[in-house]
Image (cartoon, rainbow, N blue to C red; front, side):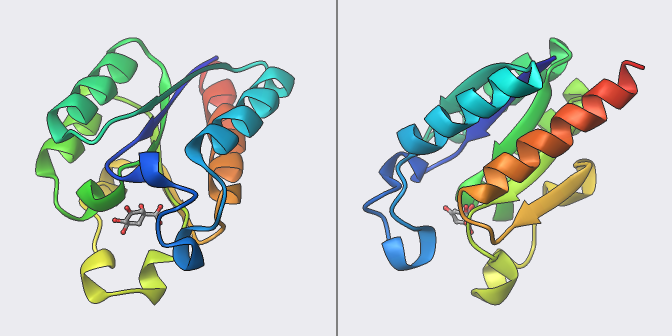
Length: 147
Ligand code: DQA
């Protein structure tokens, strides 16, 4: 089962970026733990990060067209990007939206997601565990879909 974990802008700064909100784990720490989890789940993991909206659109298209599941933390683009939403719906990607922080407990501009309506579900507020829960859920959805 192929799954692409896609990370948007500023997530390369995890570990030193507002640790009171995002914690002290780095993106490399999260990737390492997910790779271990993927091995036990029998999932082929691709893990990517970009600060560029268009590049993230390309990553989503690539995953969707290849039939891979998408676990996406689009970071700030979650709240701004129609292009990213169209990439999910247009490529037919089975996607789950995730966030480290509980976006609903934060500023009002973080309460709206352009992506959530075209995702299977949303997981937020659990720190790095949001990635882990998301990977588990996506693997189950993909396994159910392929019978
Ligand atoms: C985030 C939440 C977003 O609102 C914010 O712009 C981020 C990170 C999270 O993982 O909590 O960059 O996606």
